[in-house]
Amino acid sequence: MSHLDLFERASELAYRSCLPHVSIDCAVFGFHESSLKVLLLKMKGFDKWGLPGGYVKKDENLDAAAYRILKARTGASNIYLEQFRVFGQTGRSEHELAHWPEHLWQKQRFISTGYYALVDYTTIIPVVDRISEQCEWKDIDDLPDLMMDHQDILHSALTALRRNIHYSPIGLNLLPKAFTMPQLQKLYELILGKKLHRGNFQRKMHGFDILVKEDIVPVKTSHRPPIYYSFDIEKYNNALKYGLRQEW
Amino acid sequence: MSHLDLFERASELAYRSCLPHVSIDCAVFGFHESSLKVLLLKMKGFDKWGLPGGYVKKDENLDAAAYRILKARTGASNIYLEQFRVFGQTGRSEHELAHWPEHLWQKQRFISTGYYALVDYTTIIPVVDRISEQCEWKDIDDLPDLMMDHQDILHSALTALRRNIHYSPIGLNLLPKAFTMPQLQKLYELILGKKLHRGNFQRKMHGFDILVKEDIVPVKTSHRPPIYYSFDIEKYNNALKYGLRQEW
DNA sequence: TCAAAAGTGTTTATTATACACCCATGA
DNA sequence: TCATGGGTGTATAATAAACACTTTTGA
Image 1: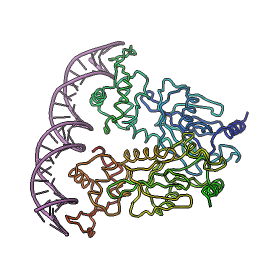
Image 2 (image 1 turned 90 degrees about the horizontal axis):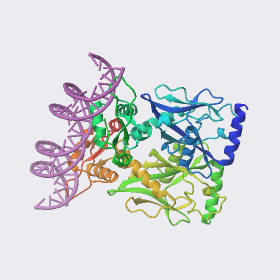
Image 3 (image 1 turned 90 degrees about the vertical axis):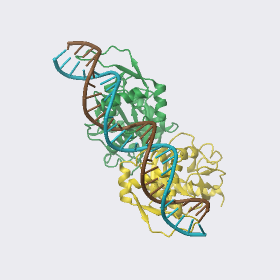
Image 4 (image 1 turned 180 degrees about the vertical axis):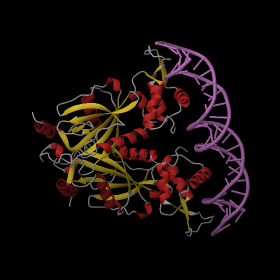
């Protein structure tokens, strides 16, 4: 089946079941090997990458649609999602879809709600579906060309994430269940975009009283193995209500 | 003409010129007589109040629509607007419009983008249009019953405003061109929801170096008349980039 | 003389930021 | 012995928060 046929099919389906003019775009963040990653996909027939997204069923809550879209794309449920901005400029997709036939659903003007998602990199399996040919993690510092206004959306998501760092359980959602102090620090440094003082960071984190030591056999190293921690979720959430203190 | 006839007319017009399923709701804040006000209106045929809102023309940017809606409602252009959240639950308006005929535009499901606006109370003239019978400032601490989920939206707007207080030029937009230090302090106290220490507040504000003394003949008082200030807009905006320091 | 406004001085507590050590661990 | 991680002590600077006092102004 040609790419266009695929999109024709998707178009018909969407006309029947989804709200016109309303869409969702998601910036899915993950943390791996000391860097921040974002889940991108390449649609068949496009040479640029894009954020995963989709449409809202006529009878579906907006948030529920975002969950559904991400579940299909990552296999994971219970994903941490945060709405951060609406993108409603006219002509957002005009240039990109110039060669498509007018009657296609995708050619409509869309008002897109941007969500960012925080996921545990290790538990996600990027899913390539019928209309995409690749779905991969890309390093935030080494992004490919993005389609439409997805560059803006992603940048806006990162800014929102940074602003929310003291009010969102980013550690809980971006790290594996058990993690080390250097990992946690690195994550904060990446999001805040600056180096933090190791000793003070450690003291501060322990001061919040949200970390629990885990008995985990460390991987073999040629030096002292790190201690593994997990979050005391209740205490974590409680601490977040007041904000984990700002500034660094 | 009956209320329903009016809405029928509006409905037809909207079907022709607006994007279906997409709407805007605005929380317009003003400051007057030591209290925070919000602009509410009462639609004909309803006994509850609501936030001003409207729809997006097929060829209009989302932000532009919000400006247009507010300009029509207040007569003011150059209004400070900030998008803060999307409200996309199903059945948001179901209960309220239960008795309306199904074919009306207004009976659709709407995904509504919430904006908050900061305006100078003294320069605004609330406009009653064809479909509303009242448009008035209401005290934030003494609100009437609100229709649909407008209570939520308003609450959410206030929270957003509070979070942005150090990053938005709230003084510039909520106060008249010339204002006094006690007014400015009162405004901060209202938004933050707590008393601030007068001496420290004054010192801090002067420390930001964003205030300019104005030569204004003070109103007659039986005590020392206050000094009038205005903002040095350039310095104000510059200071906001780094945030006007948090916490108080 | 009073009430509201303006302006400063000062103290205390808290926090951020740095620097400097110490020790532990496993190849 | 080295590299990395874990932990702590301490000193300084900056800031928040509180209290107090003085002065100004116009009725």
